[in-house]
Length: 420
Image (cartoon, rainbow, N blue to C red; front, side, top):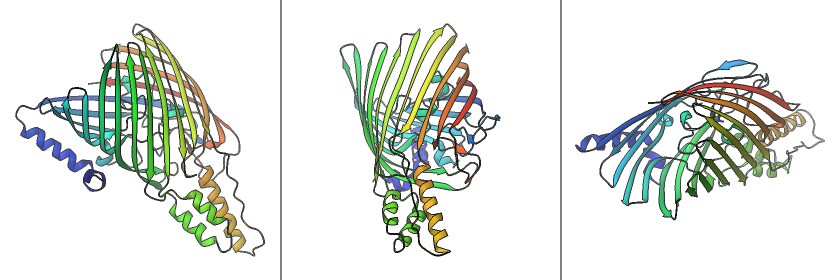
């Protein structure tokens, strides 16, 4: 494992890159930035709308929320020579655990021994989606935010490790081949405005193939995630302790365990843009060896038309589970208070196994106005239909209260995106 992965992290690396760049008299520097000021409101009183699962707050019951989509980022690129360059990117935004280390999205050294071949080492963006390189740069995509049904679960923005990229010019197109490996350690909120978190430490490896020719872009990517810790260790301990009274608890503990288990992404995407009409779509299969990570399929399709400064677009998405909901039944025949304790344990197990399920679909319309250079104003209207056993992309506003009916939410969003 790399030093930066387990111990150095990105803050010492950031300092190292800064010192190295300053020490070079002939280094070329370039600073750029991006920002989004967003407002969003959702009318559902039971479920809070959020941009991704790293956020512990959101809009519900027609509340107006500005932190969901608002952010500001800066990027510093330094070229040391024709073979070496560095990049550091910091982003300030709403996330559950906000500190400097998490705000460093990129901090890497790139070595290019020959034209078309890159080796990067450090904190890298995870290149397994169409928007991987710019999913936080609102000006770079047409919508207010990346499609909710697809990108809300994909909160893996970066990892500490290495990647290799080879670019080939074939006929009239370009083929990019990439492989990567590294580690990430993230915390996720377990409830609305709650200090309780779930921690996930994992190693990620994968590859991507991207073909671009004229107006078309096609890609396939694969990522395998190996989990290094048990996300729900207290529940596993309780189930193990209950095995003498409830032998099936050993099976539930096995389903709940995450340490040493893997999950994987298979993603395909396409994009088309002739400067007038554009279309983009992605589909992902998430397959998991542990019930705590939701096994599901995700897809979206968006089509738009440009009219000089204005763009109109439609957006539709779907996310559905590929496993049935789990039914956990406590054993009968025990006296009080053992019976009540086993019933509570069974209910907690069912909540953990079913609470991660994702089952929803959406339709939306939007308009983008590029009213000035490097500035765009967007308005987006969406309707979400959420299955009562598939609310994991949202936060429940009443902790511990079950969602007994399918839900619907009208989400209205406005954003101002700028580059500088």
